[in-house]
Length: 615
Image (cartoon, rainbow, N blue to C red; front, side, top):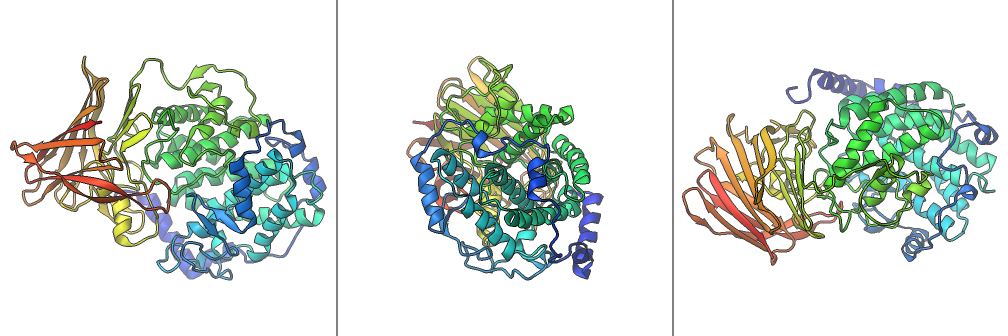
């Protein structure tokens, strides 16, 4: 109640009551009788424009890359490269390729448990059914001049035959439903003129699209009230685009009108005025970048516009992510929740490289992203080269502050220093305030551990979501906030002051947060970071106000390159602190746990000063 407010608690209470009594189930009919709502000829003749009208209309430079061919060969063998790059055999639509658990496809979606220790992480089941792999097939067909339309449509029909409307795990999440509809739509336009797209095939697809969008519309308040993050942006956009691109479907005009207004409201609320994002996650912010690209471009192609706030927040989002980007690799700090989401992969670049997605939206908004390279995403979206009217990075500027989200970044020629010191008016996913990330050239020397999995054993889950996996301070083994069930934290940490400034010789970060309320209501963590200009040297001073006398202050540092990192620490009593070095964990990609090296400085007093030098 304290964190989320009355509206959230009231909605969740009523929603759970409706679910348990069966009222919610009645609103979502199982396996409704087939009906042709939209014929193939009607769809082909409707006036709405897509990014392209067919594969024949595309004028993208062909690039038959070996990486793309290799992914197709894996798909042909029944192997699916997952969101984390791991290749798994996928059997049917209901077996979790990670845990081996098979979901009951006959259960109404309201009865499906999406957080089961036995089933494992449901994301692994959802991944193939999201149909993001279709972009590999579509790009392969274009670049290699092949035709796998029959394969694509048979997979879609297989899913439709196996998943009765409103039953099974694939109707559990409206965002997954929305993505599936958008990805099918991309395939429909690409193979628009293919002999494989018959009347019979389209009949089944239009029926499934209608009922999936019907589900999203009638369950939209769950995302807009109970979840309110990238899910809500995805679903409201799907409703707008569903109404725009399939105007003859029953209810399409209502979907379009409400979806557009809701999308504008979500963008206005979720993207802060400084361009940072309410989920405090780089990966989920990139998700929003892709959705904004779809939204702005398709609206423009069809002579429509969104409220000015959408473009304004899109520009600010681009600037924020670009400032946080490592120039050499396109990688960003692995900060916040990172589940591997990359909805529309239209290139061969590695998952952690954000440049293709940022480039597409920047080109659409005529902004110079200040990085070099060619990325085909913008070409698939039909974005013309109209020149640039602005830049994302300011020339000769080194210090960037984003106080609404609480991010403070210093960019020098060879280093990027990133510090988070923020308040939480929206739900945090990780207890990671005052985390420090340091990059030297293309190497992430001091790193964030990432997320690993959202459904794993309690100790691992707490490590990755908690304070222990971040470059900040703990008291004993206590997190900055008190952990609740699943994604819930209590006693959200709040910033009381933060700033980034410079002197003649140094850049200086100063920040203070209220934290550790489970140990005392007045505890404050104060951090100062001083970086010598043009030197690989940082001085970090951590002070805990009102530190309980019985607790141990623990300063943590995580790296994969311990040989390059020199740490020297002392406390306020003048004692030289001896490092405690032990193996740690990190997950650069979702679901892949790797070792790193953790250095811990412990002190009984309330202040630790550490000098960081990098070879």
